[in-house]
Image 1 (cartoon, rainbow, N blue to C red):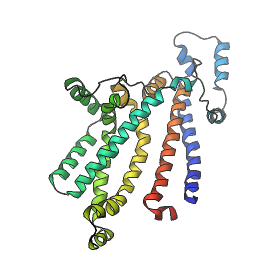
Image 2 (cartoon, rainbow, N blue to C red):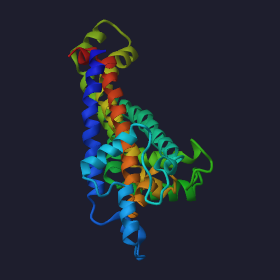
Image 3 (cartoon, rainbow, N blue to C red):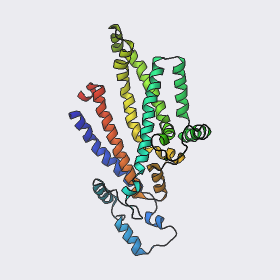
Image 4 (cartoon, one colour):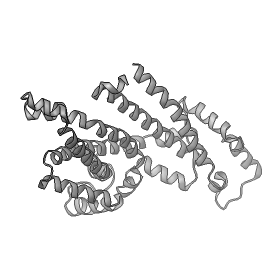
Length: 307
């Protein structure tokens, strides 16, 4: 309990420092968002002044941030410059991105750990060589190349998956984009699991377990793999937040109406409230997931929570 409370208190300043930095970066962008929204049409000074007052653009940055967070903690993420509530704009888009991220995360978890265990237990063999070569290739190729190649080969040529949109729902519509989004993380999970498992299989406690006559499956599953998963859990926890934030490219390739598309459109239109609202929610998700990962450490290795 003390360990959990300590980690929770550490997360609070991280949240406010991160969101303030993002808020400052977005609203410090060159140009006037009100004038950018108006385009070539001139705005009367009174209208310009009213809009700037409504969105607190004339206030100091720290005041703007304080007012924003005061409303955000009450569930109000503000309004766009056209008057539409940000929460209403994002309604439905979070579900698309969350389903995409969960699909990619499950793909990383199941396939990545599976390949890592196979490679680690067959070090130097054909399976190990194939996993190392395959993961190196995936890490080296940019995600948009993997995305377009998979879309053409598996979607258009072989008709194994839908090529765009979410008409067929979860998980069918999300399988191919989820594999593309999770391919980079899968390569790291497989390599991390392999390396960690090889090191733990040489450890004294594993030799002791073998000397006691325990079955190989029990030695691997109960002793070696459990400790090997600690760095893997760390990576998977951090990577879930990255998947949510990194869905911009994948959503563009497969035409998924998620927050990635919305962020891209909002940056082009200089819709600062929308960008800050989305990123604030992403930061919260990232911090909560990492907090859960830290708590999971205590389950996997009680010495960490006692330390």
